[in-house]
Length: 104
Image (tube, rainbow, N blue to C red; front, side, top):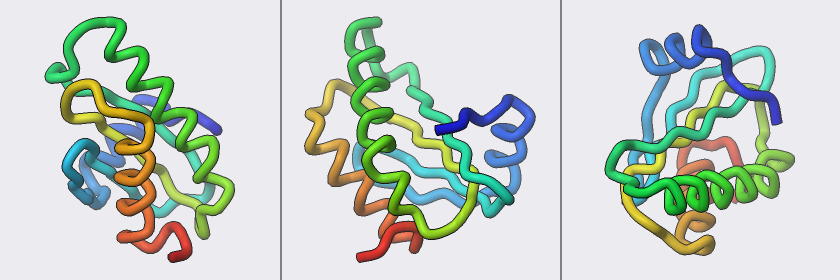
């Protein structure tokens, strides 16, 4: 899983599309390669919770990204609090299916 550079991330937020979920926001833009960024808002309080949430999202992406249909830049933004692995998994799975990146 390649990481987005700050320049690519800026282009993604300026010209990309956004899909909102209850716990996560998903930004994406078509590109020539698949790159990912995991970001957390300041509403996710505490270092332990932030790190645990980031690790959970990265693990979910490790499982889901091999099934992604096409190349694009993706940014996953966690909006709030401590959520279980399965809450994050289903939310991210539904967001990726909703934009057509994962088969249903």
